Length: 141
Length: 276
Image (cartoon, rainbow over all chains, first blue to last red; front, side):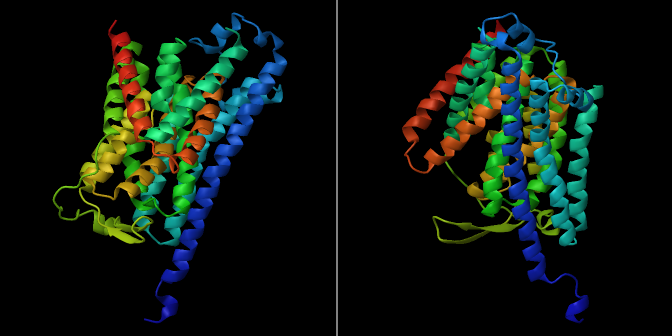
């Protein structure tokens, strides 16, 4: 068998896998920093919009109690962002944070494709599908 | 209490919780949930929702560093995530059905176990035959051990039992909003016989994905209140980062023992309040 049709050369494959590892590391770090920045921005915005929050108010019950009217679908968040509502920015930051490990799984699929590792492409795709399913299940259940 | 003092005090306490969690090797979640329920009187569902988000943030931050250092076994992590994510979704659903007081009791028990587990000594029993699954799945690996100054190779055993335990760890994580690293690390270290350093790096790597699976359910159900989650997530990350900087420099044995006692007391109180 000649080297050209012997499949991916181990050394090159390893370098590509290493690159994917570094991308995973960067995605995780960037995702956390970016989402926390959006969350802090949204929190500050809430207090700027509601000067009353600086004093004791019954609003605290509404904000932290059961049935808090918080945005929890992408549509509601998008609507709130257009109106520059602070809590909508916080919610968007939270969604970004939850999406960070999900992006990591999606990128891992690439690493296993490079290695021509069918079993692990399947394993990783299943995990990704489960993660996406959780949002759908939560919304209906 | 004004919303401003609520946010600021919660931010401060979350920084402390993250710091403590990071020194103990536990996530911030196991400290944050009792604080929210016992100190602030927040419904345990919302406490769990806020905690699970902070778990994603700390785990992802730590995992970023471990992956770069090649301490994580990515193949073992991906394979076991089949178990942890399925478990997490199960747990998040159970949390929607189970009464708040029972959640509190279960939380207290798991918390007590987790803090005691931190005192556990490293010990390995007799060598086991390699797992039938480890070969075809190519789970065996190696890592560079800094204290030994050489590459350590290891083999993975009892893969199926490990996967089953990961399902249970995932279910506890989804039910209580904690990373449940205290369950994942022994499952890899004692059952699957991965080196302890690889076990904790790999556990950390999986915690983010596990938490994302249950966070999806909590978020879509409306159990994650942005007003509570914002200071908790920000504070825990700041505290955990500070903790990881201090960790290498100080001899933290006395501090650890003090924290374990404190956590045990709080866990008893969680159970007691649930029983009342």
